[in-house]
Length: 90
Image (cartoon, rainbow, N blue to C red; front, side):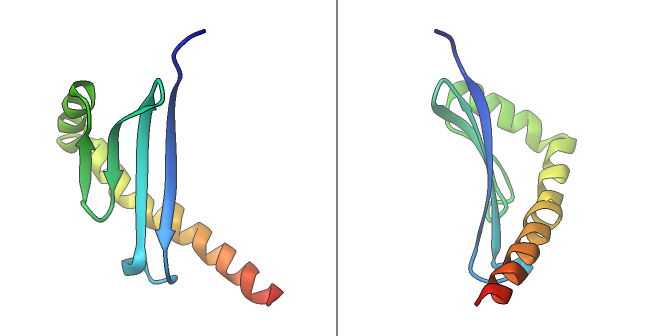
């Protein structure tokens, strides 16, 4: 029995326009979300003492720029592919 650390990255959207897409990157430790990046907020937010300290560090480092770029690189790219696949099946 041990602790589990994992990350979940998801894209929430209602159209393929970049302005209608939200990237949410959540970080968990032992089933507790300790920090999150949301493209709507535009920065990391910590939910625990550990998460707050890391969010402050990430918001002042290269991680923030990288996460802001992930919305277009990860979400937009995959949504365009999935959207076209759904259209061809309907």
